[in-house]
Image 1 (tube, rainbow, N blue to C red):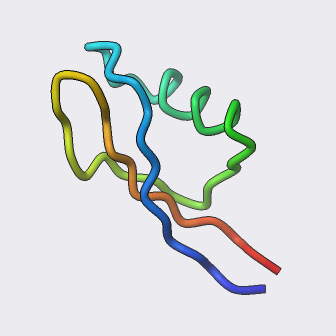
Image 2: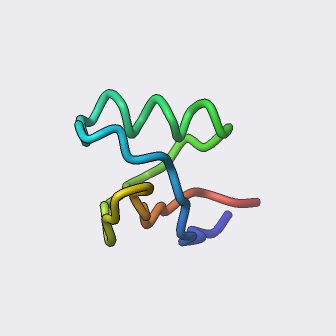
Length: 54
């Protein structure tokens, strides 16, 4: 296994709570080791995600 980092774009709901972001990532089939918001604009959050890949 190796850790793979990717950037994911999710809709900006004006409330960047942990529950919202992790819910959106799970909806996309992503179970991250870690994540961080790296960019915000009026429409989207750009999230850096580290995930295990085989």
